[in-house]
Amino acid sequence: MSNVEFPNTAIGLPSDAAERRAIPPVICYPNETLPKPNLPQYLSARETAQKTDEVLVAPRQAACFRVAAGSFFRITSVEGPQVGDLNLWHSADLSERFFSGKTRALHGTHVTAGERLWSSLPHLRPMATIVADSLGWYGIDSYGGSVHDVIGTRCDPYTGNLLAGGHYHHCCHSNLTRALADELGTSLAEAERHVHDVLNVFMCTGFTRDTGQYFMKASPVRPGDYLEFFAEIDLLGALSACPGGDCGAEHTSDSAACHPLLVEVFTPDDTVLDGWQSPARNGYDGSHGRS
Ligand SMILES: [Zn+2]
Image (cartoon, rainbow, N blue to C red; front, side):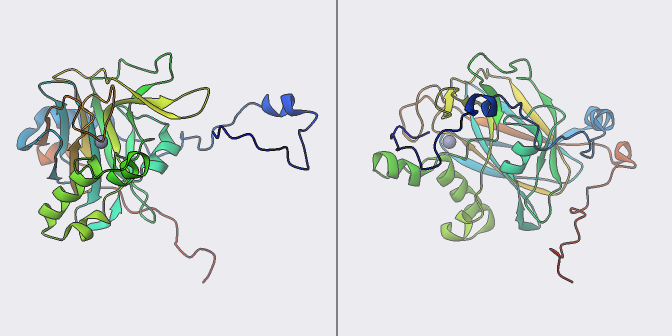
């Protein structure tokens, strides 16, 4: 919201302004008809799963990992409170990537167990389903804050430069760019175009009620807290351990205490997923009204 006072436009203030403001909102996307994950089946599959991979993400760095459809991955805070910025792609087609904005429109500003991360158009299908969230107890605090948001974008050096000048190189955007370039064996420029708006794992955020501004506050995450996902499609992931640490004070600098994050992959017995199928691409015919 701007602080600048603009003169009233010719049409002026309506005489029924109060009544207009009092109109109750309607939910843009009632989500009762979304295809539902079979959580009991996922949880029984999880009981049979064995750890098949792990990656430790160093503070102020990012790392990539791969998860086959039908496997699980868990992000755990280790050593100290730390926020992570997560990107996901279809491992065989990087043009299909996590769609933070539509996930927000479908599920709300923050996500938790039972909700899903959706992919970009024209795919728009679940990429991953959250099966466990040890911070599910947090709920929504008195400031309107909650954890695991899909409202922030990722800290990046361009916004940092715009607001404060300088060239800070360990924002999540740069960390993700370097990690993806190393994973794919491409240039930084080629990798950068694939980096997208994130799921802010463990980050505690909201919008201020008076100015509508994006806020952050110290994450409630403690060592051992985790967020776990079931991979609905073959995934390439990248996770950045944000330079903001617990994001209680600032980011885009080296001033915050930062800690590593652990990513573990668990693969279940094939038989327990009998009947489960990786979701197909979205059913819209793609004609956009032309034959
Ligand atoms: Zn960050």
